[in-house]
Length: 272
Image (cartoon, rainbow, N blue to C red; front, top):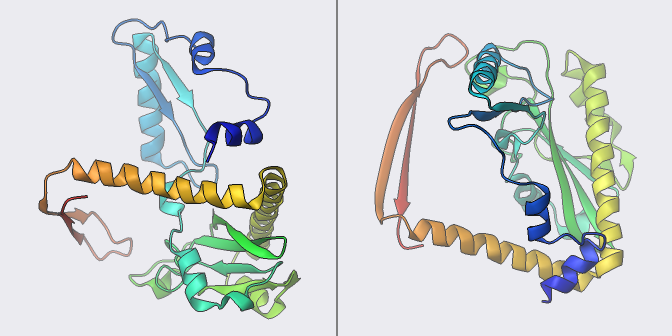
């Protein structure tokens, strides 16, 4: 694959070289010992007291040392990733039962590939020239009134991976069942609609990209990108000594008055 040709197709208006960018953004002229830090709260969550104290402390340290504090509002919390959702979908549904216009919904960490129940994942299959080429996936943290208890059944409604839209039509029974179990249902409906819109936007942009570079180039690029990620991961693992590594710690509270919770893990490293 000619990566330079692909880059020219993807970013035809980008002409700056790395040297030009380094000249445009020179090394920061900060005094010795200056503290350069940032605070990056999520726009979909809450700023907890500890986060606020940390941010104020960082701002004071930066100010007193001649440094700078950057406030960056973002939503890249790795806890909200749903690496298992697509795998669950492909195991549960035959390829012939997945159609253009379908939208799947899930939140259950055990059967839906989710993280925890407030994080609802939506998946939209993307078709190009009649072929399934990708899935648009996003996750939204859906706040609701307080729920307490030591089990997952106390957290709220568990949603396995099911169709919320079928061939572009809302599956009303599924939607009604989900909305009935939210205390703040109007907010949740708005948030779900926002997730649906962003997925459609992503699907449209992917189709535009495929019109520009072609399906063969896109599939080859995806393959090379996965190979590159695996190669980097194996190199990093190989640099670690072989062996078994164990660690345990306690979560301070289970959130329901049950005291500390033991967390144990073991990692086995062998070669790459």
